[in-house]
Image 1 (cartoon, rainbow, N blue to C red):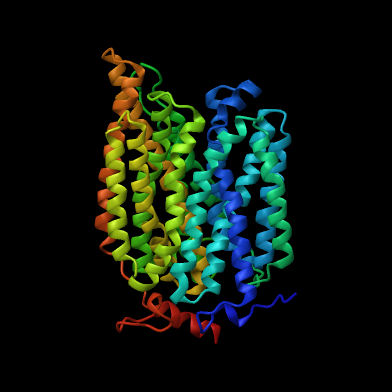
Image 2 (cartoon, one colour):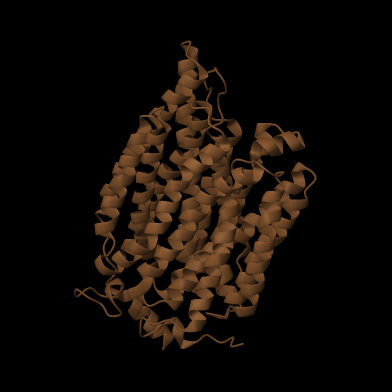
Length: 505
């Protein structure tokens, strides 16, 4: 097995070698498995609570703990991909995910189950940055859009299938079978990967900065914990008294730790020892794309969290029905992704982002009316999902394609971290708005269902307004010179490519 990097990871022609195709396909399959696991537990919490005798606030840690772990691990993936080879990083990710799945499948109580979810999340956090970095190293710029479109299928379809698969399994088997069914698939993916994946890049022995690791873990972990907990004030008909004190303290600690983390990275990157190299933000396109991701992911996650609550509490639909209602949008987004990738390679990001984001706004606006006709909610969700299909691929490809190859690992880690933090912030904001409106309706004598409906309508309206902001931000996105072909076009300097050619020489 060849372990040295082949020249193919900076190809001169659009053709991919058989080795490179095998690597990409195996990473896509593995990523699909681990990302599917993110949402497979979403409708399983009630059965788990009944079986293990848990209250809602305790059971919620099975999802909160997963998010916290993702937020802590993703920022250090840039270092891991620089320190270890491709096969080693893949082995770390899939071993962690498989071991975590096994622990969950045999867990007799809450604490082992939580431990299994944390171990699972550690592997999941590594897999997506590994996939994006490897693809960008292997694929020529003129085909980035097409291949990143395939990655968008994984990102969109896997989470959409999670609740549906979960609902089907739970209708015929206990909740542990959610992990029992995933375990052999994870073992297969790990076995094939360890046998066939060859190194795209070799690791360079360099020590991690302990202070950066601590500041990263405390900063991102506390920030996500604070954001997920900030909407917890107020239950039932009582007016919310404000965010819980623990969440506010966590937010303050998280922000302070992140400020110190940024200061530390600015110092270390001068000697090429940064845990997360912030020179990625020197690229205008990368910075604008990340800003767009913050607003978009916040609006989208808020909608995704609130919609099932509305469907179950107001329309009184079953978890299986809710999962099936979410399925058409996810499948439509996944099926459209390859076409969007091809279009991106031809026309660039802006002609896709602007109409795509407009469709997202329209879809959320339809759902903001929270109609009692379930079919109309499905229509709004499908429109939103189709719009997102025109957003994911151009946004990720433009952000990552604007960086020098040496910064790919750090760029993918930043993108993953932004998605987690912005998603937690958006969900917290929308749930907080909904709960406060619902409490006000209840205080005026309205029913709980009427309060949830009114609160969801206001939250979706705000989410649509945030979506309008993303359309404005998208106007500042420019096409990367190399995305139009293997040579610069339009007279624009291709600084990242030039920088990389010098280093490769």
